[in-house]
Length: 163
Image 1 (spheres, one colour):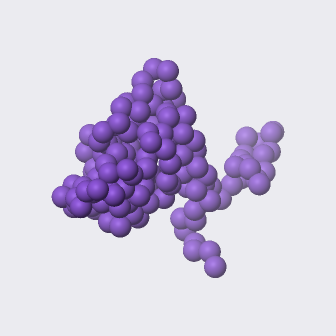
Image 2 (cartoon, helix red, strand yellow):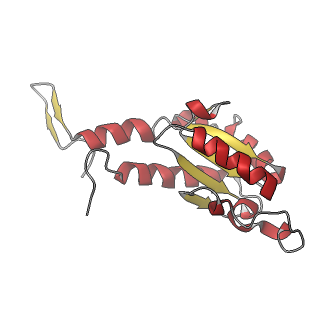
């Protein structure tokens, strides 16, 4: 079923439910906070540049967690940095989502085998909604991950809990 359940042409009336209306506004205006290190940070910058331009999807970068509803964690995260990531996540208002970008943020990457200080996945500290694999993942993969998150947001229920 689409966004519009019924459309009456002559009366200028559109019927839908509140969940669909709220989710439509949330999925089309994701304001994101970046926590990027190493080579994934470079690919993340390319995603916001003119060639890929995620602004056209309603994604606007924010410099403070209090204005963001999406956190993109990209690159190698150490145990010392993980507490800062968690603090930033806790400062974000509800609803909030997290994208883990790259092998290092997902599972520690190639550095966790020989280093005691590298975290083996950011999901040990904060809940992750979408994982994007790759070392580093291309901007197209990040855009696909954003669309997967938008699908997840579209299925959420705001007013009533399912099952």
